[in-house]
Length: 425
Image 1 (cartoon, helix red, strand yellow):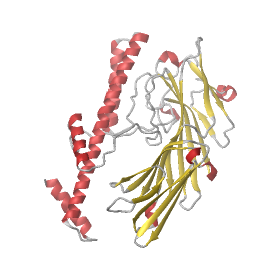
Image 2 (tube, helix red, strand yellow):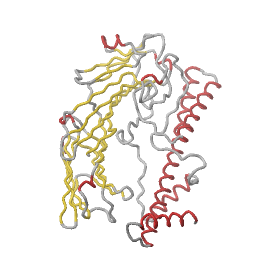
Image 3 (spheres, rainbow, N blue to C red):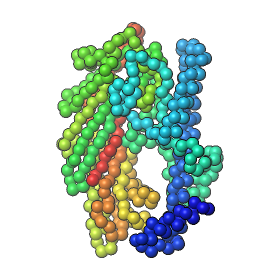
Image 4 (spheres, rainbow, N blue to C red):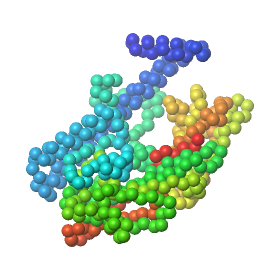
């Protein structure tokens, strides 16, 4: 109990300078911290175990595939699995979350993967769902059964437990399903928008990537045929090892040395190997996919907050979450009207307004809630998350052409837009 006593004493000292503190308040603060810490670590451990299981299954699939296709020797497969396990453990120990990007192995640079070497060494796929605590630090958790029992006990005590779901693209900043097709091409755009609370646009920036993921080395002898529109205001860059002349004249993406295949197997990027990147920046407010208007007004001892959204007809927005910060309050806010669903996060003091789909049938909506009297600036900045199947850049994959002859290989094609940073300030 030494830590609990010291922590409670610290609460009394830190708060005692400004206001009187009761024993009930100290107890409440201590219990909230304890529950938050335990819940956070339990969820992290659960996600770690789940990710390890996924990677084991993936390693097994690669093992079987290589035996059937290439009759690879046992030593090579063991080296591949060992490399994957090492990368997974390093990712957990570093408590890093891997985001999606467009480079040949990194989100920040085109040259982070050496295409000249075309190494097939596995770089592992870091979990985009959670991070792990460092070994030997913090609370040690039990097995999955004990974790589930503890979560059930927290639910019995009235705690709100948010079950982990497959994150939408905008929320995980680029969550991509595990590739099962021989060839997968993904077009992804990340959206950065800063809106003014009184109207107007501070910044709108779009960063896009066309990425390629190949499971088997023999399928890497290909070229990718694309189509693109006018795309005014967009700046394009290809990877240094892509044949730029071929791309500019024929819209074909192929390597400078066609005798070498594209890299196959897992890469450091969840999307795969980045072939083309583009960027667009604008101050045109009409391009904003979703506008937010928030009006806090004080009446007596209460603050009435009316917030509304208005969506552009260019996109169908999915899994929209509008997070409004609230001042420190004891009780949940009173929601008088809402188009969609809402949830109050007491630990972060945030009201989350959720709309599963915004299209032409509900291009506008509103919500009204009431809290005790507060400064209007307490409800900003507002964070927004969503995904869309359409992108700003008019680019699409038409076909995949084999360089060694034969019929065109089968491939999967995905298009997605995600919000990286979308705020009303």
